[in-house]
Length: 113
Length: 114
Image (cartoon, rainbow over the protein chains, first blue to last red):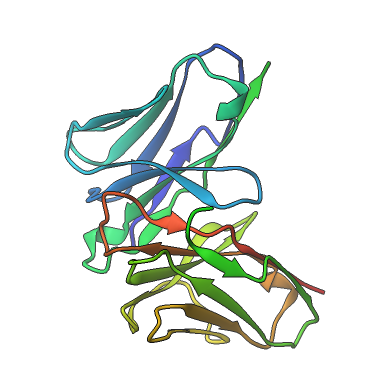
């Protein structure tokens, strides 16, 4: 079955700094979703990438899917305390027609004011 | 408010008991997905329904079952509960699989088994 590995597991940055979170898949990605979760709360959808080389931005967050469609990165520019939380990447399991998502274990981001 | 409603928000029950978690998907969404989130296992896919029919199964235990009703709400039944079943249970919905607008998650039900 498909597995997603996220790195780093946790990250502490100073406010204003840039940072990158990576998500690597064991199989080709047919749809890669990025979510943000505040501790103990629901997941908030950030963006979805589908095509190799695709890049999308939402406010100060940019995500990219590599050409081989096996790795995605999430980049935050000029981080703010509001960016703190757990970032999860999710992928459609093995490209199956059912579309159920599997997730990486998440990257916990803390932003120091 | 995401549009996906989960009840109850919190549930405390004893080992061996049975509970039912309820999910109302976002208006217009036909697919419902159930997930379990624990500290050590992360977010695990349990089961998916589409328009009343089971479409995919993940790491769902035999003690757990689910269904989606004609009005599209879904229920997850957990029986013979064990301490290890304590977790956050999320429901998500989408118009269809592979939705480019993402899968909308509810705020979850926190289950504590004592």
